[in-house]
Image 1 (cartoon, rainbow, N blue to C red):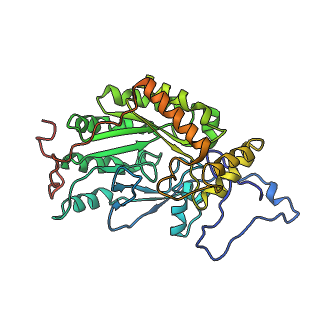
Image 2 (image 1 turned 60 degrees about the horizontal axis):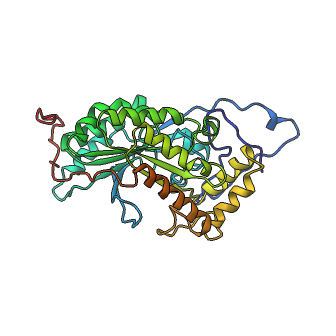
Image 3 (image 1 turned 90 degrees about the horizontal axis):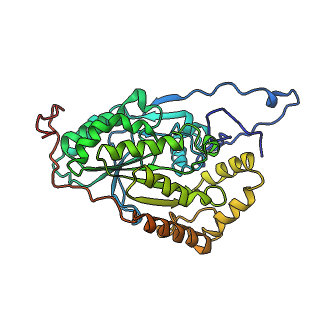
Length: 358
């Protein structure tokens, strides 16, 4: 394996070119010790996404929604297992370090959303946010794009669901609580591990696990339906924490739970293996063998029926353990369905009506 590019606060240890690039490069030792020199700081670069629309539609049979919004492309959280990493290859960027350091922002997202919701043929259905990259990643503190999107959805009384691993969501409790009172919002906090040391390398710039549990408590206290997403379950690395995570989230106030088995599409497979052999060399082969065992002998099976749960004895055992702990804690039911009958097209000027909070 080439010398790892180990930057503090970054997940990937390489920046290999995406699958569409005609040329690939690899660092080589020139004998002058250049590879031994300390790496310079790697700052986050903000790029502008000039997309003309903001709602993405899908017809996937294994997703509970048909439309979503992602305010950012790339994610500063740097989760090494992120299935969205390959999307950076479409931009001519690397799914490795580029994905977590070269972030495309959508400054016009709220206005584009307002225009799309106002179209004559638009039909209301729950919107999902956080399905590809986290809408509450660190850049959101300054960009506030997610906040602007929520304001548009609140004005239109449009239902939405959010999945995040960031406690920054607490900033928007005022909007979310008002929408929750009308049955318009549900939230899942994603928790991969309770081990702070593991979390620092696995998802280096995400909120610490215990802080996410506190966010669950804060959301529940505000009357916002909140659940936990145990994602991903990583064989021989985090799988032993499955019950502990569900119990901790339940104690914090989560009223529902879901899980996703680790999936490694396209470039993510190599990036994850590099990370694994760097940080957990003695476990690497065991982890990879269990992953292949659960995906028909491959690191990833894209079949809609299996990609999020896996197949085989090991994957079935994970599913049985999850169902048992959820049944024991009585959180084996989904969050309440969201209302779509309150939707009204946004006002042209963007001003919220005085009757929103009534």
